[in-house]
Amino acid sequence: SSPDNEGVTPELEKAGLLNKTKIAEGGRKLRKNWNPSWVVLVGNSLVFFKDPKSQNPESWKPGNSRPESSVDLRGAQLQWANDLSSKKNVFKLRTVTGNEYLLQSETDSLIREWYMTIQRVIDRLDAE
Ligand code: I3S
Image (cartoon, rainbow, N blue to C red; front, side):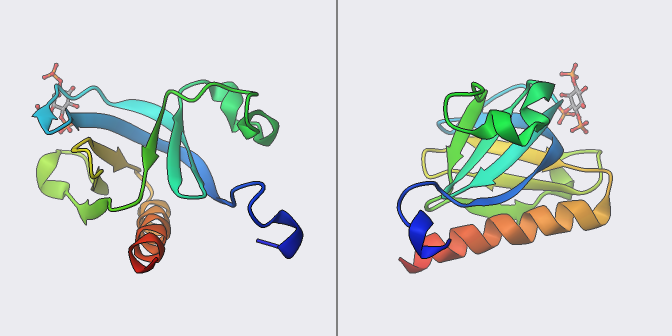
């Protein structure tokens, strides 16, 4: 972030449409329910929106659109998880609190970019 921006607005790293399902809550297994989700990686968090209006950058500003949920990436773990789904291009994100999400895209390059970008944020937080 620019010096002016330091400590004010968290950095927007990436945003896009992915298929998402939560598969565990606090370590307890949940039934899968795949849905398209507008995913925003901002600062140390991955934020999920179900509202298609959230695809408008204006609406990501704090207070303009209510996220469905948000994941703190500090201490999180990421791994490819094609064994956990019949879909291709699936990875699993596990939070320190034992929440687990599968994220998926039909587009190989797109899912690889998401994986690398999220991993980079996790690595940065691990190094702090
Ligand atoms: O891992 P599972 O349980 O085979 O996941 C599938 C089911 O959740 C299925 O719904 P039902 O709960 O009605 O059986 C979903 O429609 C599928 O999408 C899930 O599998 P995939 O392979 O798509 O992750």
